[in-house]
Length: 316
Image (cartoon, rainbow, N blue to C red; front, side, top):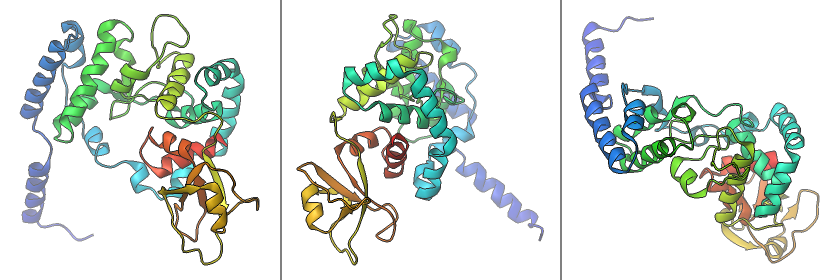
């Protein structure tokens, strides 16, 4: 390997220093501002002090905030990672173990229990992998890096309010770089508005309580427009040389899609007045899916087709 000239190395180091996010001093100043914001929002001083002392620059959190895997990974690699035999096998076992809870949640909110279980499986591997970022420090880094600071500051303050109110302990606040935490990975403001106390113990605890996590997920989907009794969609075949419309938003009734020559993978014609879009995640030469409203509801959990398709496929 050819050696890099010392002059060039110096330029590279200078470039890295210039392009690095906030310096230690500016990070400290930014965190001080967040402390003040949290105190004004009513968070206890002891909680603010414990959560936001010794915040150091977290390169990983900042890097992750600028590059999400569902936008970079080829869709079939992404799907095969999330929907493998082990996750399916574990999911079936967990559905059996928590059958009573899942059925109660489905009855209460009208949301398919298989979709709820699939979200649980993808988001935290059924509660086993809830994330290893300490949320107050990760959110402080992301908020202070210059990307959507108001949003991430708000998430951080909301998270600290749970600790201040006694619903959670500070050590419960481990999750993703973006602040999502708990068994079904709610961001703090969503937790604040949509989490439910499904086990009726007086606390909304999505970290330790399976009933609360599953009930809250169903509540989230219902509030975002879930239609009871309707699936997410299904795989279809295109007619040879198909040149018609496609895309999740180019919706038409199922009977209209049938008139365009599209058939289900089992050969049956789509039928009914329900509207659907034609999803072609790998182009016209790849698999095709008619996706219904509930697919779009799943997509609100993580705004990407690959994610919603993985959840839908795992639920099947």
